[in-house]
Image 1 (tube, rainbow, N blue to C red):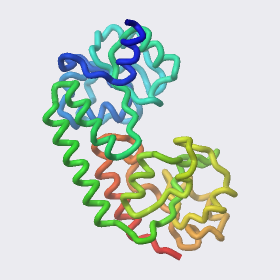
Image 2: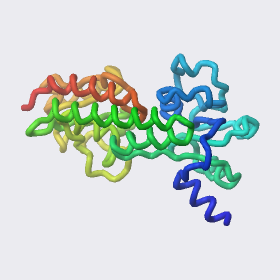
Image 3: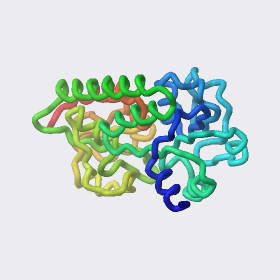
Image 4: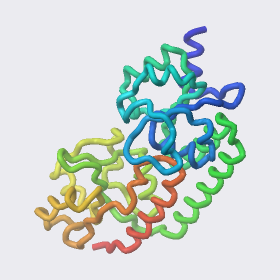
Length: 267
């Protein structure tokens, strides 16, 4: 019976009734609760950067990567929302061992993200709103895909961090957003979600656009004028860091990315 319960939790089995007391352990999940209009059921959240205005009064249960377990237990939550990287593995296993009901969100595509809105909506008593968000998100993605399609996708290197150098691998939402915008992640053949790569590997793949978090993080590429992206002047700051938070706001972030990449020249 215990093994069956654990399996049910890992598969995010639907509760019999809508959850009344929800704790979010990931910034993206907190945003989804806000987008669903379900903040009245949010009794705790893990902090991870600046909070949206609508979440200012929600009690904290720690900071991203460090959960205050006693505080969490005191909230008597009947649903916990988290993502794979929001807690250390040991603490995630603790939740399972304690039999706490949780939903583990790990969308690998924009379509899966849209489905997540409906799934969480159903679990927190906002089923209709969740279905509405799903439909609007999918419609918006389809519109962007049609508007920004290119016959030859723009090769893009997406820099997550510069020292050491990290990028995105295959089956990543950011990579999907690039594809919607008529671009291609030059490391889409790497299986890790956030692989470390070398400058030499980037040079070999000849991206024609390089994207990163800030001008300071991207400055080092000027030492490599042979790179098409540098030669074309297409080393750009990511227009909206919301690309890295899988919630409904990612649709607007993807649109800003598409508008930027629409101006990319091919050599």
